[in-house]
Length: 209
Length: 209
DNA sequence: ATGGGACGGATTGTGTAACAATCCTCGGGT
DNA sequence: ACCCGAGGATTGTTACACAATCCGTCCCAT
Image (cartoon, rainbow over all chains, first blue to last red; front, side, top):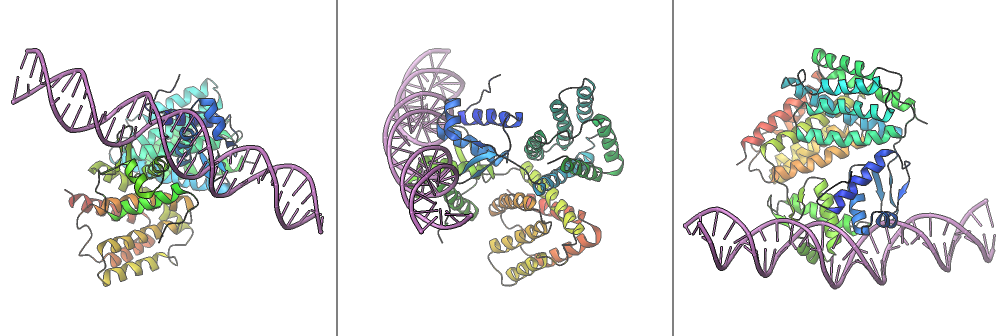
């Protein structure tokens, strides 16, 4: 499944994004330009452009003259990332509710897929992907392209974070949890999402070295 | 006041950002790589890197093989930008309130500066800058670097938008309005911000071609 | 006149090679 | 043990070249 793209930079960025989000690279690990240029058979300029775009997504961090590395997250950064997610998802839920788009939306379907992923005991990485899709679906229900795009990159960051956090949400019924969450949002308003994310934040922080 | 910076790309990006936010360039106007390279005496690669970073901030839009132009905003984009602002600022206000940081914060000082800018009948662009600083101060009160950074780039976008919108918030007492807003937030909660921004959205959209 | 194409200049995308600037490591000297 | 300098490794930047794409224009056939 080669990534077709209009430009080499875009294609390389996509390939590197996939690689980073596959977990094959440890947080803090440097990405060397020459090596990547040789491996993907592109010029260093192309590599640099792709790396810069991934750094803009915060999957990588770049320091002048010191190269780019896979992002690592300390506790403060995790908290602030979750605060951002909360901001966007709550607002999105509110907009979706106002437009009456939450009930009949894709969210239920996403939750069903999450349930199936859990039932067939998939790779926890697949379960997590389905979990992320549920939250993305909630945001998408707001009908704002901008909110969706912004939230998607946050989910990417979160995925990277989870990749390198041992045993996070195992031994739970995520699907049922989110069905409840959805009902609460419909009944009590978007604030239900705040506590949902806050819970995941404390769990996330607990299960870290 | 030359911009000193560790790298040429960073310096050029800063210079171009200032230029875009000065209003000297019309929305939709293309930025040609050769011209910029010649004018700033840097290579085209450096120009491209700087343009890419401004595009990531959404001050410019880039299309493959078609160049980058100064961003223009249609009604939908304005709405969605304001939705994002609402999300961040409401969440920030909530966090600031929880931490008790809103009352004794820098926000009052920012409002004072806004009052002074209005009193001495400054350039409306200066007034708007002071106005933006008030909202930034509210977000900063949350104490989240990430929220502040993200909000700052949104304010940049908004500044560009306002630059090319005639006569927006003139003939009003913005400072007093925001003192009231602050009291409402403290008394009634962060939701007061939502209506504040919503109001500005409708005004903004009304005063556009 | 009018709706395609075909042509050609302008602009962007990418590569190669080189060098400057900075970082980093590893010794040697005190 | 600590400072420091030398040298290699890596990034930042440049110049030049060429391919890929876009865009306006002109010509032609209907």
